[in-house]
Structure formats: structure tokens, C-alpha cells
Image (cartoon, rainbow, N blue to C red; front, side, top):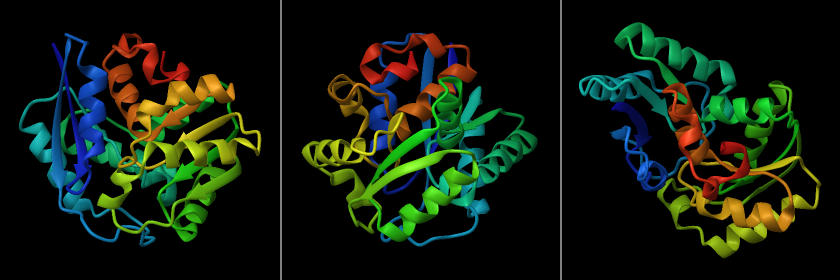
Length: 234
């Protein structure tokens, strides 16, 4: 039996739902979770992680002797991918446990499939979207479209209706990206990916499911997922 722990903000309700749904039929893996305090307005552009919170959550997961720790959050796209690489190194150095992140998993999936033209669907204001675009552009991606819902409260992201997210995905698809990203780990986009892929004839990725894929792949279980989570996760 393999185990992995996931770090998530206290006001996030989507990460646990998706992680449990994706791993429910994989008998050889056990997912676990640790929260750090984060609620209310969350669209302030910051320049670094709050390290005591992140490493404190990692400590709680290390107490359970998990085999891997996953930061299933999208903030690294704003801060720059190197911040997530630093986070992974600090977790491994301090606790002796390898780590992955949602952003680095998304990057790995896109790079492995030769995807460079991407479009974002987010719950954020344009100021935050602009920061995300700069982060991904610096990593070599061509961000051809981005559409945010203008929300500012972390919990509110989880309340977005499937119909709204579907309409937003159709809108950014008009820019003809190579892939669409539901970009926020408190956004309920994972269950929409395969239906939109069939309709739009292009890959649709979700931040949360990419993070779970990254954790499973690092544990040697990358081929365990069903097709219902998106074509690039197989």
C-alpha cells in the first residue's frame, strides 16, 4: 500500500472531493490531507508562500509517514514555477519525503504532450489572471486566452456552476488553444473535462486532477486512472 498526503487551504472543499473520487477504485493507494488556515479574500497578489503554514501542514502529513506530499494548489503559477520547486526541495530536505505540486504536474503533462498554446478558465479577477499569464509565459507557454469570473473569496470559487464553467471553456476555445486549463484548485472543473474534450476536440485539464495525477505518477501508479478524468491523464 502506498500513501500520499495533500496540503490544501482550510477554505478549499474541492481538493478532497476530487482526490477521493479519483483514488476510490485504486486499492493500492491511501490519500490523506492536511489544511492550513486560509479563508476570505484570496486574490491578493503575493510574492511568496507563507512558509510556516506550508511546512506546518507538511509536518502534519509527515507524522502519518506518507510516501509523498502533494501541494494541490495553483499559486505557483503566479509566483513562478521555481517557487514550487523550492517548496518540493524544502519538504524533502526537512522531512525526507518527496513532494510534487499541481502546477509542476500540469507543466509535466503539457510538456510531455507537446502543448504550448494554452487557455485559462479561472474564478479570479483580471489582475490575478494577468499574474498567472506572466508566470506561465515565463515558463515558455503561449497563453492565447484567459477568462475569469471576477470572484475574490476563496470559498466562493467552489460554488461556480458547471454551466458557467462550460460556457467559459467554450469562450476561450475560440482562441484555438492546444489545451484548456481549469486553473484553481477550489474550482469544480474536474468532472467537466471529458465532456468538453469530446465537444471541443482538444485536451481540457483541471488543476486538482493534475495534482492527483502527479502524486500517483510519482508513486508509480500513473496508469491507474480511468478515462473519465481527461485524455492526458491516461
